[in-house]
Image 1 (cartoon, rainbow, N blue to C red):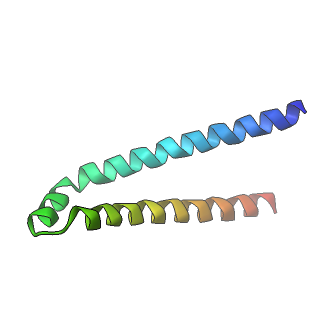
Image 2 (cartoon, one colour):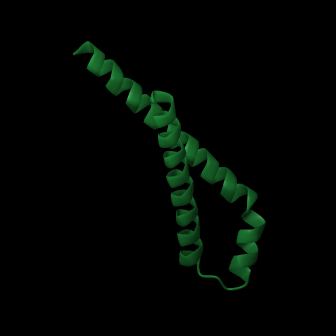
Amino acid sequence: LALTFIFQFTTAAAMLICFFSLISSMYTSVYEQRKEIGILLSLGLPRSWLTRAFIAEAFVIVLTSSLLGLMIGLMISW
């Protein structure tokens, strides 16, 4: 029972750290691309398309990091 609680706590802590890491990387990405965003908006790109592009970028980042983590974990455990 205690060991299960420790594993659940460790998993929750790791997920929380990963969440803040993702938020930080997305903020940095937007901050570094602010000139590009301004240019795209001035050319007439709707904000909804821009938002959709950043959501897609976040999805790709999460998907690739999850797959890499899964592969590394499987290789280590094997």
